Length: 143
Image (cartoon, rainbow, N blue to C red; front, top):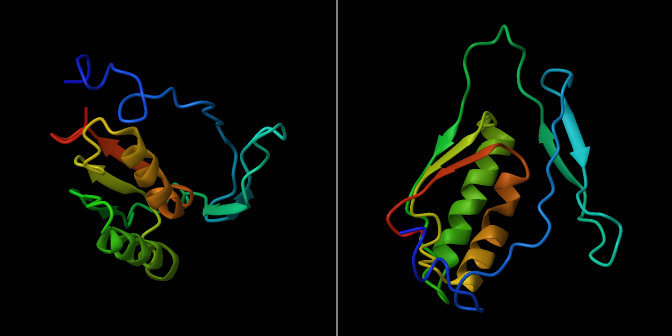
């Protein structure tokens, strides 16, 4: 339940404010073009390293290759299988043209209210979510 404990409790094992959330809307990008970017504010936290994504295909191209997976459990501290999955997904995006988007329908990291596992999961998927639109839904292990 997203409205009750542990989701509404604070502390390292529970909810922590996420800090800064950067948002941007890009329009008028040329089709199928690599876009290089960094995020940050130049303040105490500085800037990220340079990232790249490819803009969407031309509107006349109807086919889109995308990826979908679910139940990406992080069996901390043995989460090597999750890292292998991220490596395979990254290869599919870069080498096999699956750059449309990624759909992750639930059971994202099995954090079950634990902030440090959410942080691990966010770091885990960053090589993917920095390259393609990463769409998620809530599963029975998110609250």
